[in-house]
Image 1 (cartoon, protein in one colour):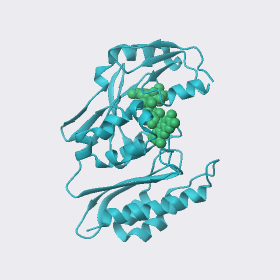
Image 2: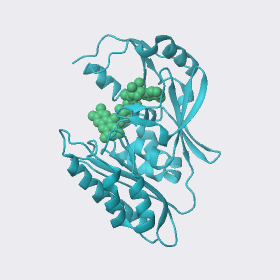
Image 3: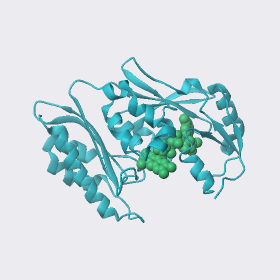
Image 4: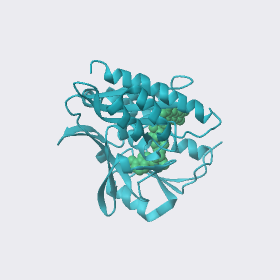
Length: 281
Ligand code: FAD
């Protein structure tokens, strides 16, 4: 299928983009890498009157370290995220997740901001943002606001981005001493969306872990911070965490796989990832 007719604007400043979005309201959509939006247009799942291309706006680019955070511009491509020394050194969880996103052609165009703004529950990067306690930096015509990842993902493809707002950057706190992480996913083929995945962070103590954040993806309508399992892993170990996980997630049946299979896969992932984080503790 082909996309419906749509007007196109390519502003060179953030203010210009925000003006266009607020002038056209629900009729306008930001265009980032286009890897999901253009597909949605072609399949007639979306029919905005205007696309506001964010690709020429310098304010949305770049990866920098300052004031205790790594700030990643929303238009950073998956490829550049995976190749960044700052990301590799300070956000190894993100660096580990990137190769699992689709295939090189999609990673060459797809952006961190696009993935986070889309809020696909099976996507890797939203789960990493939640596990790492990231902050989403949003700009509207009224100014800037910051939303913690914990309050950002609201449901299936639903986020805290208000109409006519643009996600400009994501700020990740620098890891504390003793920080450990783990990432694994299970998919039918490499590059497919995961049937279940887990992005995890914790702090290694002399005996065991604390500050555990186990974030599952592909098992609900958004990335899920498994609070019960995270607390159980810190207090009582892997088996207790696997038992507690049953109350944290409730994956539905769908065309790809039964919910109970996803639940089983999530438990398996928890065992593997937690085992890795506990090694040497
Ligand atoms: P776009 O498609 O341009 O936009 C997506 C949505 O976000 C649109 O609604 C747009 O208006 C909005 N938006 C974009 N940027 C902003 C912003 N800065 N502020 C406000 N709103 C914004 N992803 C995975 O995570 N894992 C996978 O395994 C995976 N597999 C894929 C396989 C295929 C075949 C394809 C086509 C895509 C796959 N993707 C996967 C998605 C891809 O990784 C893109 O990251 C994702 O589509 C969104 O990024 P984008 O930059 O292309 O955004």
